[in-house]
Image (cartoon, rainbow over all chains, first blue to last red; front, side, top):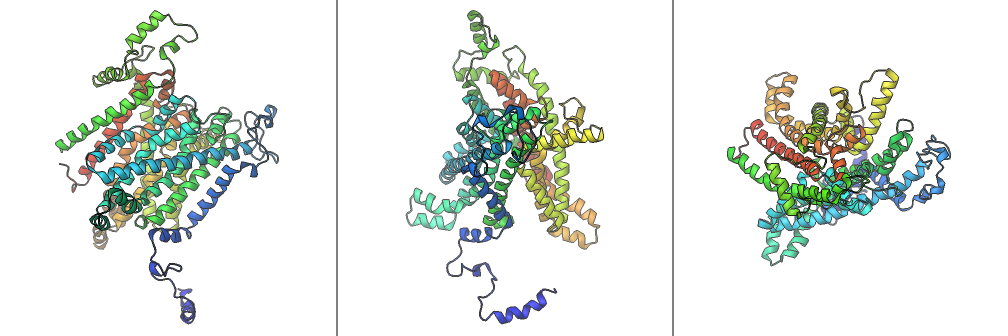
Length: 317
Length: 313
């Protein structure tokens, strides 16, 4: 109350020269001329969310770390001569911020270099599952009938298989785990989720008036699907994909921890956790530092997903 | 109702067959020779190996092998491992551990999730609400791998060292139900967060209903309005979530089992994959798929019991 009373006359006098204060969504500054689309509206909304700003900064740092790890550390952990067995499990010091691991390697440098695999696995698997699941969902939802029934039954089978155990089996077939097989195993088990969401969105969009109108004007199936339905059905898929990105990073670490994912000498946070485990109670650092980076990375992507969801789907607020 | 159950069960058959066949085919494609591995470093007598191969139908094509296996399963016979142990016997002990773990997680999930959600909903928009939502974000984000090791170190080891009392034993499943407390919490972490959010949303929605306003208007005590009118109606989606989560908890327990040295099905599956013990691997997955199907069916039927407006025909 005390704040609003003196403010009233100020706005009344200033209103003459300055643009009118934003009242309704249509009068947001910058979007007065053209009608605000869902995306420009969402972007306007996102830029003002602290959750979005925080997670974007974190993700930007992580991406730079994945691309140019040498910016953050002068030690190259891929070079085995930088490890000294005599200094194994040394506690953190000025020279080695996170201490040394069981083989006397610098934990800080390894943790920095570990970001690359997590980011690659997370982003690639997300794009592949969104494309594959999205495209199949679009086809199933648009075609309906027998095509839809068969495809939906197939996804039900995948839903019934516990994903981490399924991924473990797929990786066991390849025997050697690497970035490619891990991404494949995760994508094979994750696409049905995107499929289901896309299919539901397409079925809703399909019966809208603008689709019927386009069809009446003689638009073919391809044009209907990609020009009219897809843009209006893609939002929930983008939301789920962003949240899943964090889950894929977490799953990669879990599979590498179990010994079926990324293998040494490649550096992944899951491998570091697995390596540090036998001496965990004597020296927790080599396990806790990569674990902390892993958690912050997953947190950043899930925060981003939450922010994107809130911006794109006002109903959920 | 009866027709609905029968239809659902019939629909479950292709899912069960498809999932088991998929797993069976994957194990079939695994590299290595399970019979040769039985003899260790020595060379096995070729005649004996041939007999064993014949006995386990290993020379048959994939589809025939699958037929042998699945027709056995429908008669309640899960086969034997290559070292002549009945698979059902082997699985029973392992499933006991995993079921204990999953049930502990489910109870913790229900108590903590609904409790926190209720608290947040009643303090909607206040600092408590914001804090609880922040905690759920953390619980969803921090991987089980991390919570498992951190809690093992802090509550399992350090707390025992500093107080001398072993509140949360973490040395395998040897201390009765107490040894499942910490692993159960770790396993339930993400689910607790989702259930908290769901409880909050569901309760906030219910509190806006007309019958709640009526109850308050006629002067009913607040505790009773919330307990009898709001919570009971808000519970419906929560119970369905909990029911469907049991299968997910059992299937996702492998990381928790590995961290806390619990010898459950996750561990067994991991070993059997490397021994190429097809019947064990497929058996475990078959039971998990069954749990998933039956839990989802029960949940759907429970829906009609809890909300009489829903009818199945």
